[in-house]
Amino acid sequence: MTAAAGTLHIVATPIGNLGDLTPRAQETLRAVAAICAEDTRRTGQLLAHFGIERPLVALHDHNEDALSQRIVGRLLAGESLALVSDAGTPLVSDPGFRLVRAARAAGVRVSPVPGACAAIAALSVAGLPSDRFVFEGFLPAKASGRRERLLRLAGEPRTMVFYESSHRIAASLADMGEAFGPDRPAVIARELTKLFETVLDGTLATLRARVEADEHQRKGEFVVMVQGAGEDGEAEARLAEGRRVYARLSEHLPPSTAAKLAAELTGAPRKALYGS
Image 1: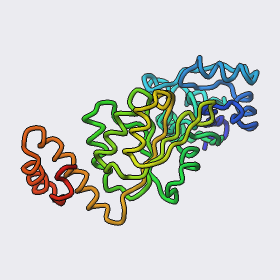
Image 2: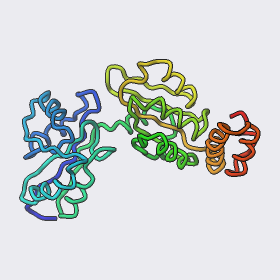
Image 3: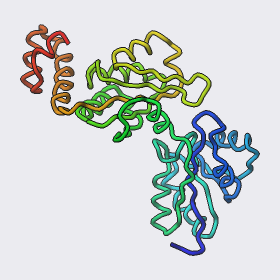
Image 4: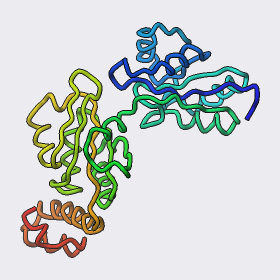
């Protein structure tokens, strides 16, 4: 580590409730030479609330590669800097890993200032198995890519954690029901730490119905958690693939024929597909 170099502080910010910005985070943000932020306007509003005045550097997906070495140069020259995202812990479905990698490669100290994280906050109140889980972040925006990703996860034994947006939540729940089966237990956490926070649990089918029936449950920011496959995860994966193939074939063939072909192609039990 370069002795004269500064420190890159990775600072978690609130996901909604401003009271979740820790005293240590406030102290760190006041002390650094500049703050690298995904959206400088949004971060500027947060800093103004706490009376913090620091220069801001826009760092996002489109310029991170170009700016990282310049920022590392400032760190090597002795400045300490902070990295924040729009909300929550940086690098969790947010930009920053290229900067952190470049800083560490240059021998710069990178130090976390922990705080809010939507995925962890949601998991803590979900009531799903949390001793082992997998964070999948945002699913692909296009339906075909989303369904392909979900099918690959059908046999995943750990609880799965996803982020989702308001305009895709209903479609994603429908695709999850098709990939994992409509009876798979799941939890939706919406607008965590904010005024209209809700946490809904049930099967994927019941959650989809609740979201589609209530427009208020289609607004805001979502964390969707789905219980992992049972002990026979491979069988569940085959059944999920069989359901997907059956749904496509039944658009052009009689149900009995579609189920027979889907079972032959995927190894899923025919009786479980017919009429699914």
